[in-house]
Image (cartoon, rainbow, N blue to C red):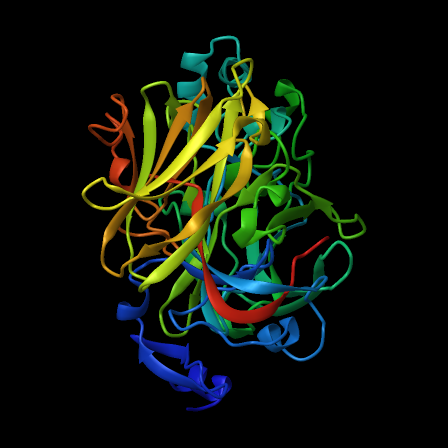
Length: 499
């Protein structure tokens, strides 16, 4: 056993540093057998996300988990530790944050310690095809106004309140900052590291999810808050970044500009109250358009990102909820049921409860949501029920996370396939947004926190037969926002971020 710092330095691809669980030491062990893409997290209550190996951490306090002292931890309170299996990411639809003329920040909590060497994000700029296709589908829209005034992908955005980009997107540098540990938890303003060369977003349109090397590796400590700060080095000189008249927009800057950060959008609530038990309130985006301006929190957007560690492992959040409230919304009602299938790679664990992001359709009976865990033969091995009154009600929203316990606990065997089945009883009508990871071309975003070997399915005959969603090219990659919990037998403090 060796100290973490030395272990992180010595472990080489495809090895990585893993906690032994004995005496506070670490060993280099092969990563492939440990993860297989499955998410295992050590958190307490609705606390911070702490990415963990199969071996559970024996920390005794939040300070032990994230470093000396209380800097960068948020508030603390005692609770027993839980492990989580599943997909912790939530969203309603896709959407970009506001475009920015000076800086944008993506706050995140490091899920492991080590040196990060590259950063990736979705380079979403306005395309000429966007303008033409959206005008064709909505003839009275602002897109047609752009065409009528001969505005193109460089100038159309200037005439809108917000767009994917204006001009050439400007010149962007990406930095990593510490969190300032204030009540708002903002960037410190001091870069720990930055990418080697700034880039022009419009010049990289062919690369949907580019990655950029840092000038030198940046050391991150597991459990601490950090910010990816996108700095605009070439904002528009002649025009505002939005709201210009179509006539004036013709003459706006083409060799300068601004861009937004693409990702997921929440129709109701805010991004930071939709994080569930894994992400808590830690993830957020902020922008400001001048150095003297205060940071403003994006109320309903959360951008995608990925970070690569020196051993080759990628960790990030690039879950796509495209049309999550329409054609990719799954429904449990009457004879229609929903289930999440998965293979258990964790080990033999006793599941104590389930978290699921769901809403109840407005103006329908409250009913009850029945939740069963079944084995590979579709035989039930555990069940629980959530009263419909405790599930958010709306006609067009993603709802929020709700929780139910299994009495008694449900034993899952390593390597076996299971399903979590959702059925409406007593007239209930429940809806589940679904998402896919952006691991496919042309994005190829990577993260070892994605849930692998899992998919959501539906039944129209009370669970007798099951199938994936028809005409969905990503049906086998589509998942519910769902987590199963198991007790770790350890103890740590709750580092829930309150700002």
